[in-house]
Image (cartoon, rainbow, N blue to C red; front, top):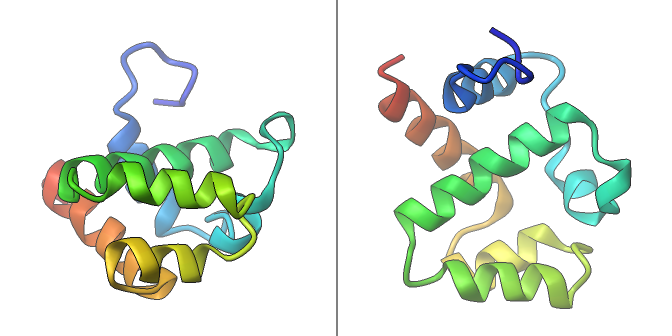
Amino acid sequence: KDLEDPKADWLALGLKLINSKDKPDIHLLAGRKLNDLTKYDVLYSYCIAAYICEGHPDKCADFFRRVADKDGTDIGMVALESLGFDHVALERRVKRWLEETTGN
């Protein structure tokens, strides 16, 4: 199923994206204007946001505030300051969370 399908499982599609060559670069993703985002950017952003909200509910507001304040220019620093780990660990944790959540 594709993203446009109302019955699509966005988390399963997100895991498929993360394992593909089409996975967006988290540094470029964080600095893009909303109208410049591709459907893959939106899907990856959704997965990251879902992981942070579910896995770190006490830190998610701070993370998103810092992303907005820094205009997305340094996602690695934002992750380190608000979550306690860098963007590499964030991507690794999102992937593991998606695997656990989707059962894949």
